[in-house]
Length: 500
Image (cartoon, rainbow, N blue to C red; front, side):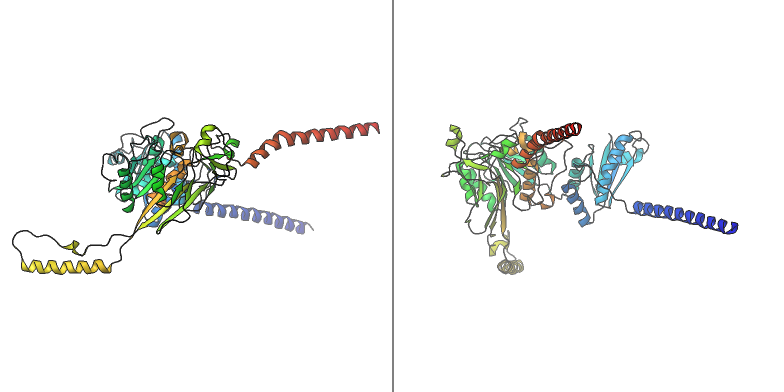
């Protein structure tokens, strides 16, 4: 009996030890798998530790082109807090692109590497891709992604801002200036310059985009002709309109499939959100490259309606992108001045109303001249050279006749509001992203169309009218009323219990 008891104890003890060993082996195996295949989860509501869509797209471009990235982070060893903050950000990029490699260097201890990379201040990050490099001193997602975009760009595209008609000023930091928008455009690595068409015969050949930002008077007829010639060359035009101000400009836009009216949009939804009746809120977007996966609300202060023509001309493809709420409508200039904002069924339109539209216009390339390949000669004629030139000219003419001509496409984007691009409203919710997406589309940089790196500042929550009413009624009325009724019920029940 005693031997059997000892045997049972040994068996039980052995089973326990085996179970513990198996459990430990499982933990070690799981830990090994985790170390070999690390995975991050961002549990913050604002996605603080998740890269923005644009950052991921830029990294995917490097991945598609198989361009490895190297980052040298020059930090003092004693600056541990800043190093860990930078390491956490760099790890997010590493998670998206495995060939994104980084290392920390103490410039005081490793002077050779610091001198080789011309480091004279720190912290400094040096980003290298092939033979190109960029350096940044502000370590945040926006700055780092912009530096990566510079490494990708093979040409410097120019954006021209039309001047001379009361447009938003890129040099002004006031509420109605254009300095914030200009800064963001330059961060996308475009070169921004002013253009006075009254002083130049045409839009420069190197113009990637021409921006007309809220003119208060119409451009002159020769200026409009220059803009038309620019579009025929396959140019891109971005217009921010002021209601009732530019009839000639709006008439020109109609030729390209974008129609506007002498009206201004009134929106009750804006008032619910604490805004002005004349600042429509847009949460409905028509699918396009500009609005793909776009979920942010945008605000259009003092906007006129912008529609796509129902019967555009041949080779013209207009499209409405931004629609206001159903509780919006348009009023005329007379109604606005008189203070009567009610819907006039005869002259006004009921929401949803389009306040932004784009258009693509295809121009067939002009046929090549057969004699374009001929070369002029000077001095004594050379019979052999003349024969060769004649043959080359004939060959070039035959090739021109057989090669199909490549069409040129002009791109146009029209916002019904100019204030959406002003300093006061550019960073409001999705305004800036919508404008920058439009610029990327106009510059044919579709790979950059995405939600940009987010700010750490809080963003207001946009609610519909019914949701706002629910948030008011439930906590202020229904919940207190429920507690009062529950208290009254308990009180009555206790009194009855005492009486019985």
